[in-house]
Picture 1: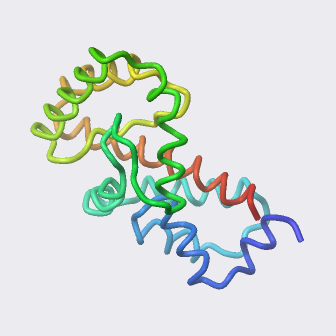
Picture 2: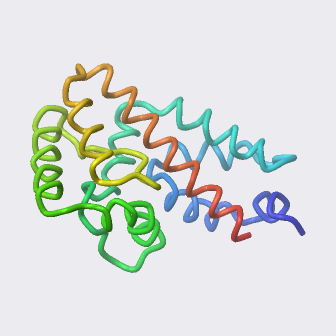
Length: 168
């Protein structure tokens, strides 16, 4: 059985657990599950992208609540925490103390302005890159930033869904 067939045949409760580890917004997981059966892997990913783009602000904020601050190590032994550590690993290895301190300050300023954690698709990025992006995004108005953060959440969810599919 290939990954798509396994994905289509998983019990909804089991698949929901996997999907919540990818993107912690129940509405997203429910929409992906409701689209089964899928014919191809690309169909699953397209449905996931569409479901992420349709999330309400409250759904996005729910999804954000599962993410640690950039530069902070996710605790615990959940799959989501392990993925977060993996996604931020390049950034964690690349930063000096001055950059780490500047990123902490940028996180605080961002949270103060927007009311939620700064989220960025961190895979493969250095802390210097992330810091520059945080500073740039601090100049956004709330409406523009909502669109950006929702898209960053979508990209992270998609990467994680690809990992789930690869493991099936």
